[in-house]
Image 1 (cartoon, rainbow, N blue to C red):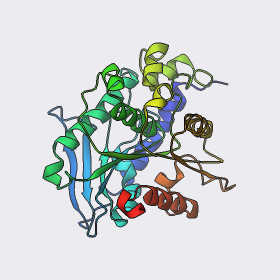
Image 2 (cartoon, rainbow, N blue to C red):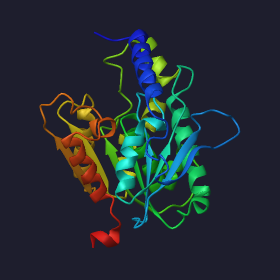
Image 3 (cartoon, helix red, strand yellow):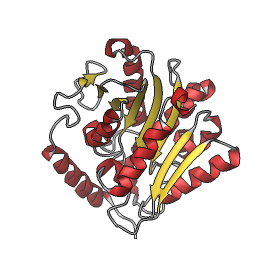
Image 4 (cartoon, rainbow, N blue to C red):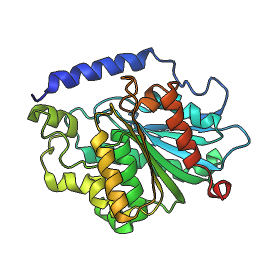
Length: 300
């Protein structure tokens, strides 16, 4: 049975209601030096913004740049505050990128462009935040994992960046960390969603397979030249995507740290370590991520 736009609308309404009830800018409460909802242009679009949080000393010298999930149609960088706080407590500086949720009128490439625009603006202003000398670790969950991996691949491959129409600055990308990511984007949705729901989630050109292949991280995984961390779990509905990513990386000889949680606890599900950071399994995954993100000198 395929699901349609009503189910998507109900999911979006439920998530937005939950977001509205949360305390704004939860990681800070005055504890950290911060730049909140920084606009990347004059559009006054609340989604074309990002947050920056500076950890207390001793700092790691690593900037975690995170892209949130949300099935391409909901959520914002505000959702990942609890996740960001874990890294801040560990001495990592954190930036939370955003993108405009799809309303059925914007193709997935437009959402990705929002996140990339935020990344470029962040890097252009790093000196103002005192982060200009830091290594970059890209991270993302679910749809955000899709965007984080695709951006990392483009940062590693100038020709791919050109194909995607991206003018990316030179950065010191240390690694990529993904939680329950979308990896093989091209076929996503065709076996489970009605056409109207596909259009709502992916935009009017949802069935343009050439465009979907270009936006699929799996198409370009050979381009990735930095270490990769991937987490999933037994009850992750996108688990097969992570398993496929691990398989491809092993075949290509890529450096990958793969964490697959076998828990029977139904709370340990899709992006559990982002949405429920205090669960024992979430603590395990997030600590593994922090260890993975440690500066190269520390690891040596």
